Image (cartoon, rainbow, N blue to C red):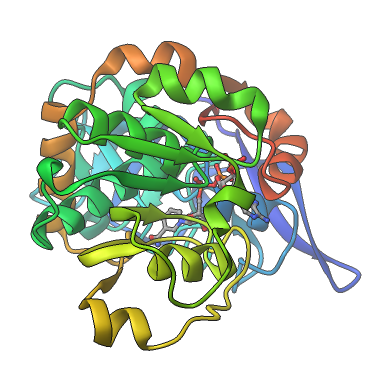
Length: 328
Ligand code: NDP
C-alpha cells in the first residue's frame, strides 16, 4: 500500500471554499470504523455545488463526493470484512463527513451497504445518488397509487441525472412518460431512454396559473420553483408529484387550490438520510427494473482532475445523464 493517495479536498482560501487535488495519508482520514479503497465516485448536482465552493461543505477541510463504491481494506465492524465490495450514497458525505473523491476513505459502517447484486462498482456509481433517488421517487408514486393505467407521467429536468434514470425506470415499468427538458439537443436521447414525447420548459409551464387544466397522472420533479408549481396545477384529480430537487430554485409559488379541489399530493423525497431498509429496497428494485443497456448512452467516465470543470457544467444544467468519477 503506498503511503500517500490522492483526494479532492475543499479548503478555505481567503474566505472562499476552493477544491484541489491533494496527497493524503491514512493518518489524515477521519476516525471511522471501515477503511475503504475507493474505485469510483460520481457527480451529482450537490457535488457541483461543493466542488465549485458554493458552501455545501459545512466543515473544512472537506473531501467531496456524496457517493462512493469500493472494497473494504480494514474493518472494526462485524458487518463488513476486508474484500467486501461496498457502496455509500449520501449520509452527509461532502457536507459534514469526508466523501468519495479520495482513493481511500474511512467511513461509518452504518452508512455502508454491500454492493447490490447484479451491479459492478462502475454501474452502481452510474446510478449513484441521482439514480437511487429516482427509484425513491418511483416508489413514492407507486405508494400513492399512481399505476401505469392512470395516465401520463411527467419528468422534469429530464436530461439530468435524476430525470434520465427516472425516465428509464418508468418506461420499463409500463408508464407513458413525457419528458420536460430545456435542451432541444437532448430530445433523441430522452426518447431512447423511453420517453414517449418531449416538451419544452415553456410548454411545461402551461398558462402558469396556480390551477390549470388537468394533464398528468403523476410527476417526478427535480427542478422546483415555478415549474413544480405548474406541475401541481396540472395534476389530474388524485394525482401526485414526487418533489426531489431545486435546479431552478427553492421557492414554490403555488396555491392550495389543486390540493383542496383535486386532492392531489405533493410528496417530498429525501435520499440523504433515508434508512438502510429503504435504501436496500430501492437498490433491489433498481436491480430488477433498470435496463442496464441505457448506460451506453447515459454515462461518461471522468478523472478526478476534471471535477472543477464538470462542477461548473452541472450547476449550469449542461450535463447530460450521469458522470462516473474514476478516482484512480
Ligand atoms: P442535474 O444537473 O444532472 O439535472 C438537473 C436538470 O434540471 C438539468 O439537467 C436540466 O434538465 C434541469 N435544469 C437545470 N437548471 C434549470 C433551470 N434553471 N430551470 C429549469 N430546469 C433546469 O442534477 P441531478 O439530476 O443530479 O439532480 C437534480 C436535482 O435533484 C438537484 O436539484 C439535486 O440537488 C436534487 N437531488 C435531490 C436529492 C434528494 O435526496 N432530495 C437527491 C439527488 C438530487 P434539462 O436540460 O433536461 O431541462
